[in-house]
Length: 224
Image (tube, rainbow, N blue to C red; front, side):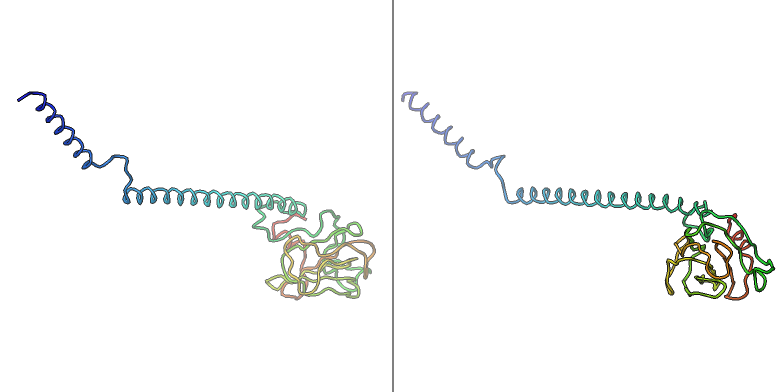
């Protein structure tokens, strides 16, 4: 037999074998349902992490903005309190002075023709219309004309102490209102029994007899 037919037969057999193996072997780049699921899961996890990162960044930005706003507010509050004699931590303030600018005049306990009895408060001479502020936080329990005291505002503190602001020309609060330290109360006037524009300040523990306002202010850490 000729060798040519045998060689042709061998070639056919080799090609057939190769084709069979090729059909049986899986293609490396062929997608399967399992690989699709894994790829989808990875994509979903990546998207979720990206969303969480964006949310955390937004939360951090909001917290920083709030912190900056509080810092600005504290700086402003501290400046206001310093105007009224308090230079400590704004969060710890208990009391301030009633006026930004004043001169001390008639003191507590004086007697004389200017008063029907002993002088029951401390006078702070000031200009007509100067702003009076609350020396401590409390509730406004009276705003009224009161004979020799003129236009008077009474603020009652949580411990029952009454603070009287007398001889005002105008008021900035109303009965029942809550005031914080250094909130405006009214303006300096010369109403009632007064020889000139000034604030008559009285301090009455438990709404009773008056005590020296200077001692009360000093006990609160102030220097009138």
